[in-house]
Length: 168
Ligand code: FES
Image (cartoon, rainbow, N blue to C red; front, side, top):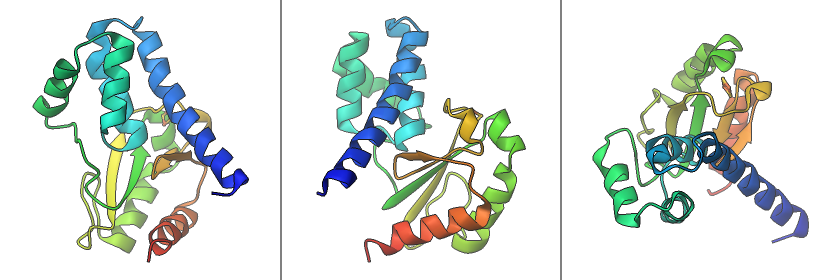
């Protein structure tokens, strides 16, 4: 991987990790913060992956079995990305006001996917999240784990298009 690309990947990883860390901090790293933290992980990563679950267990000092128990008990958590690509749209107040309905509409028109669904070809899953802590980027979107925002619906559709095309 080129140095610039590597740096970018690392900084995205850092940003997402920071959002999860902020949730844990807000709850004083107490074990009762587990559900909130898992929400936060899912919001920024699109799903709960193994590494993230291990990290949360370690940071909150909760047995891994309990973390998996909670992650699999609640239907709103998902352990696997359903589509090859994920687009998480923040529907928090700031983002909603700045154009989330138009974004959801554009995605539906172009990919025939509603929030919470995956496209028929399995390429794209669309998820929604509450405030992901990047209100300055409203409307904030997380594309394959990369936090982005301030995009017009057309630009977002282009970004999603090239994200999907890149693995063709
Ligand atoms: S409301 Fe969307 S990031 Fe805060």
